[in-house]
Image (cartoon, rainbow, N blue to C red; front, side, top):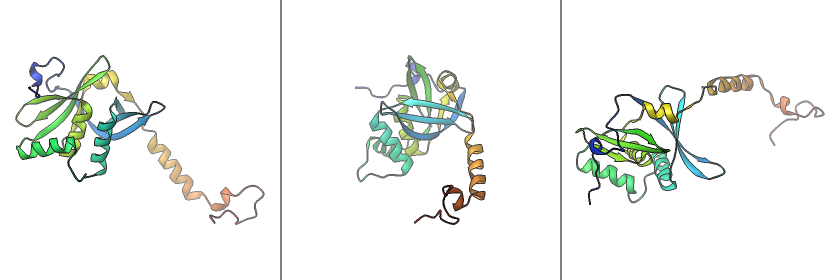
Amino acid sequence: MHFVRVCSIDTYCRAYSEFVIPVDVVGVRVEMPSNQPVLLLRESGGQRFLPIWIGAVEATAIAFAQQGVEPPRPLTHDLMANLLDAYGHDLVSVQISDLQDGVFFGVLVFADGITVSARPSDAVALALRTNAPTVVADHVFEEAGIDAPDDEEHEVEAFREFLDHVTPEDFAGPDAPPGSAKDT
């Protein structure tokens, strides 16, 4: 059985795109009410997000890597990282390379120029374990990215200003005597 597919001959795996966008792995969230895990990537220094629905096992693998959890025995992605290290193969990056009929495709890009097709969830789980950057092909972001203006900074600043001026008495009811709003 041949498990490695070189992307240059695989129609579902575009060779490393010239136009890629670096992303940060925000993490895994659970979409309600379906309880389906969603991998959330954010454009580095930007305002676009890319949600990718993934399986529960891959979500756990990504969360473990982000939290620095080291299981007593290597899990599948840990094993893959250990194999790459043992054989001296450097993972240069992972790319979310394509989107076809609602299915995302990924590519592992190695230092020797070899590219291997991978599910994006597996690719990201491996990238987190090897400190390889994750990038998204620009056409994938164009098709599936979500713009989210960064209002968070404004909200945080407004909340800080509120905290600077609030007193315990501000939380007492209208009929409470002065100084009665305390955490008891």
